[in-house]
Length: 306
Image (cartoon, rainbow, N blue to C red; front, side, top):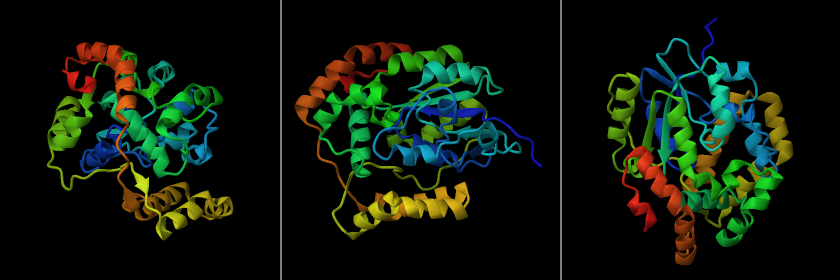
């Protein structure tokens, strides 16, 4: 029996900033074992009282790793590096960081990917529209955010709050000796350099990436038979109960992802452009936080303010 181990590499967020792509790129590295599922969310599940009360949030909760033995089973002690990519860890930093420091994790390498918070908020919104969970227009959804947070909706619904990065990033930089901050545009424009920098930072060998593509993209489902089939499969509780009774969690996760790719991700239209008035309001909301953040990470973020 293999020795149990904790991960020593954590991609902690932000959500909708390319963490899925980064996770999949790192899967190509022979020295790095990235977890399956990509987002165990164990660190937040143990420390944050999330009720998962939003539409179909229970479907997300079903995939959360809820116990330490189950979490440790995700990692391979024979590998030099073990990682996971729970994108809610950055947002829930106030409880996740103390939990990490009070476990054998203690001082893992931390990778943070940040995206223009206005774009990130709208991408999270179109992500939920894609999955047919969000039924309101974006402006209405923003107005409902505080109420939804109070009701215990899962963090993906926290469109505006998740993008207030400064305190989140500062906390990780202050608490971990190896904390690397990457911008979404860097990952999108030159993923090879991002992977090179991460490997150099953690002490892994350099690799050449293979196929480079967009993972977990947002959009609007097309109105066709594939969309109807996907909704039936996803929302049929009797079917989920049957599958859960006869298939392992790993197999269920694999099957779910294959169905999602074929009937959802490959069946998307582009989302409509963000309303210019709403965009200006969000830029104003984030402006002070962005200014503080660029000083903290020593990167010019002025393009986020336009």
